[in-house]
Image (cartoon, rainbow, N blue to C red):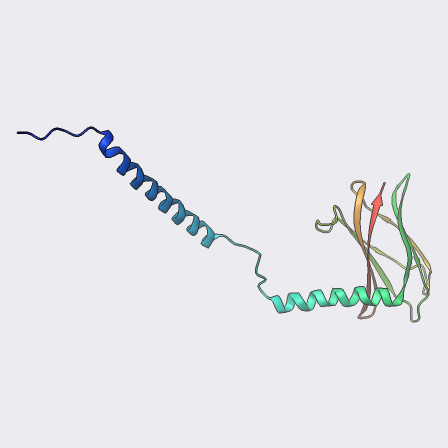
Length: 160
C-alpha cells in the first residue's frame, strides 16, 4: 500500500514559523550592526576639558551678575538696519572690549557676532550696528573683556 501524499498546507505552518524566526534574527543582526557602526555624540571625547570650559562660562555669568555692569540692552530697527544699544554701569577699572553674539532660534548655533568698540574708557552707553537676518526671539550673549578677565550676560530679546 502506498502512503497518501500529504497536502501542501500540512507543511506551511512550520515553514511560516521558521521563516518568521529567521526574519527576526536577520533584522536583529542588521540592527546590531547598524548600532555598532553609528557615530554618536552622546559621549564627550574629553569630558574633563568640556567640564572645565563649561565652568568657565558659569564663572563669567556669575561675574556679570556680581558686577551688575549691564543696566539695559536692546535692539532697535532703523532705516539702515539694526542697532544694538547697551547702557552700562561704571566700573573701575573699565572693560576694554565688548563682544555681542546672537543666535536664532535660541537653541541654534551662532548666527551673528559683532565686536563693539567702546567710545571711550568708562563709557556708559554703547551703540553699534548689528547684522540680523530675520526678526523673532534671539538669544544674545554680551561679553565684556578686560585683559584676561571676562564677564558675560545672556538675554533673550524679541527683535521686530
